[in-house]
Image (cartoon, rainbow, N blue to C red):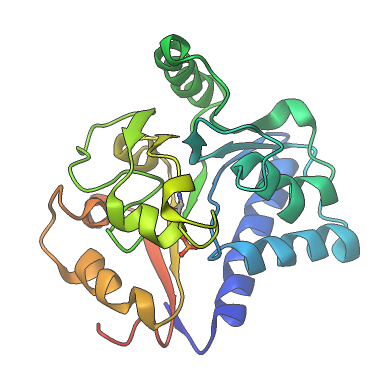
Length: 244
Ligand code: GLP
């Protein structure tokens, strides 16, 4: 779907999520939602907060799993995705703390593997992801699944691509401050969601969107794996869709 601007596009995605939450609530079930960070989803979160405040949308029955976190990372750091999610969404809605899952950047190295296994198990235990929200990195990464990530990959520690670190450099006040690693859900974890929505805004994303949507499915552009998903939408503004 191509929208005139990212605002209209974000409203569409927020509405889809709200509808899922209400539907699940009626069924007396939890809505299990995979969430993303970065600049792309911020407007969509603004809309969800607005729906909570103005339209009584409750998040009491919502369980969330975030895609990724830098490693190492303290949750109170200005760069942490925990802090990002609190500031953009969780601090403003009624989601129970116990329903929130974000990869833990404070783990000891030797504990990461068990944590990742437990993250996957927890997703399965709550019935799997109803929907996964994604942005896309210039390397074609989804979550932090950089080029070379395999179709069946699961939650794990990864090394970040230089392009991804360069893109993050200004946020971190210099490339040398950007972590070299992250913990991310895998391509397989993302593809296991019953529905996937990938969002992209701005001309800077147009070339990677063209590759992701029209390119050959390959490990060197992990977002191309989404072509194999039976229920995946790409939501773009005019600029991001301009090379399609
Ligand atoms: C980071 C995140 C990704 C996100 C990407 C794009 O690398 N880990 O999940 O999709 O950035 O960022 P932005 O939305 O700021 O363009």
